Image 1 (cartoon, rainbow, N blue to C red):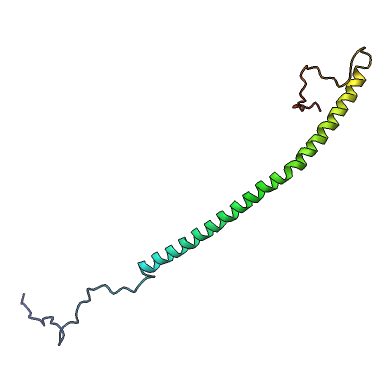
Image 2 (cartoon, rainbow, N blue to C red):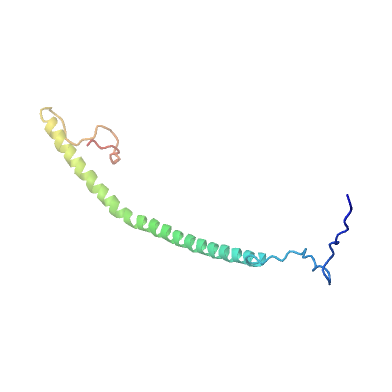
Length: 124
């Protein structure tokens, strides 16, 4: 076998172009400072709104407490009327039930104390 001397592969005239080894990626999104500033702004706004909501809730709670304080006399008067009506109905039932018992006084307390106590239990 005969050795054939061929053409050697050589670089083109002027040489090869330079190898690009640096990364040349495009910028993707905002910088860290912009992201951090945005987070601070949103958090600041959220805390501001939270404070405003707390003030509103405090005012609503104060209004609710004062409305309850102001309605107490009306509720007590309504309760007194209800107690009076129930006591009169109980006396009417007692007089009907005990009409045949001699010496029975309707409405007289079975206790010996002189102090009036509102009834704490109702029989409906």
